[in-house]
Length: 214
Image (cartoon, one colour):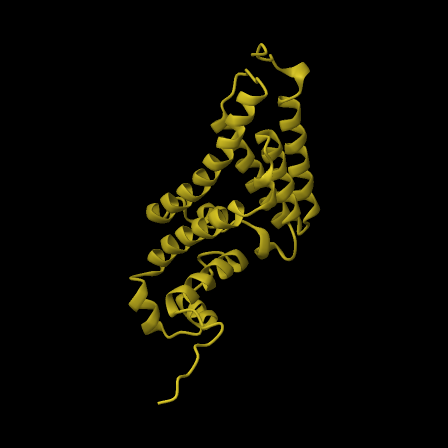
């Protein structure tokens, strides 16, 4: 029997293709406007395959939100700003990176979890919970750098790292909404630039109390 080498890039399985289809279509059309038939067509699978992997469209929504969390965690873990030794530079670099990736069409850079939860927060508790975990989980990673920056640079202020990290996500999600409303990417870019200036002000020596040198 002749050995046949495996394909260099084997096609993903039906479950992964359905998740990828959901991540794209929901950002293009919205959750309600995306049907099971649409998902199957985009993924190139049958409805039987869909219901083999997911009990319902809601179950797919939860799984897609979890997949988004996994994808984005890996994406940001490998981002260039992670290489900065100073945590403040990582925070500012994170914002620069968020601005830099605002490229292409809106569905290519908007947040899947934010898009999904805006539509289903009152109708699907399981999806809302998965989206909340995605957004706040990412905010917690940003908060770790903010907390380290506050410690290193001696910032004593009436806010917590967690609250500032959540504020950053509120600005980003709002920036996506403005981009959708106006059809313009530049309004989102400007929102992130304002946020960056705000963070810089919080860490300016004249706007904070420095720790005594060791």
